[in-house]
Length: 333
Image 1 (cartoon, helix red, strand yellow):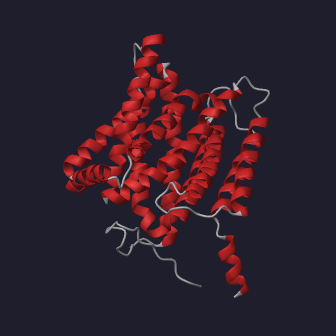
Image 2 (image 1 turned 180 degrees about the vertical axis):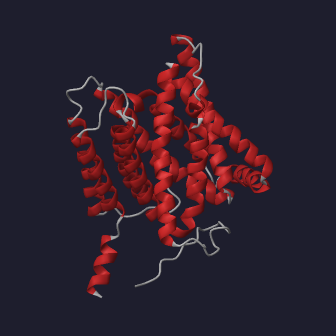
Image 3 (image 1 turned 90 degrees about the vertical axis):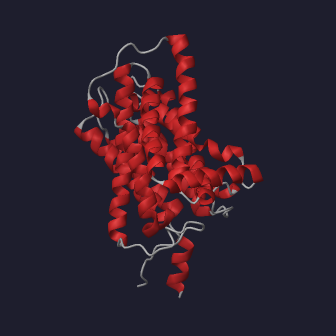
């Protein structure tokens, strides 16, 4: 059996060093990172419900993360040097301005959490997000948007996307008799598609900046600007929140987001991007199911179709990500 080793990321001297984490431990960390993703959906969703304004909840979550990253830039000069590299790359044309707008997709994802997560339930919300991520990953590889360039469209990828969409339809079938407006599913579905694009353009920024901190800061900065504009427009038409909840845990969305991004940057040296992505999705789905079992949202108990749809969505990610052709060659060898 061949030993799994971390693959260096081009242009990143930190990732070129050998990782001290064993693969099995890095996978466990990756699953925990994915669970934070689902936990953030519950926190931001509940904050939006208690404020009565999903736009304001998204601004609070993204804005608090931006404050943390600003402190990080003050403490670590590598992040500031990365900003200089990005500015020079944009001026020279090696990086387009729209590569800096990945935070807009992140902002839309956080906004969808505040508007739809509590109404749909975390499990159903996460299944829709995973389906969108699967479709988006296929498109990003096909058109070469990510730092890895264009990758061929294979039959397994197409099958995986179809399975992901079937998972959403199966999960939705259990909600047809409820009072949930099913059009809300478009929010996490589109947000999942945006997540794939966000990761692709952020990957390009990270390589040119040679700093994950720089890419994360720019992501939160553009996302916060977009959310503030949207919240002001919404507030002028529907009114602004007059009070805020006092429970401290409702304001942890930004902190969770920073931990999620920082943790992924650490373990990717051991797992590689493929294994990291699969482990994160597993953590998302498992934590979402656990949250709906332990603390279900009001009026949305966990159903068998939701569990089955979650399992099918996880299978879709495995189908898309697993290197079936490589496995076949090894067996023939």
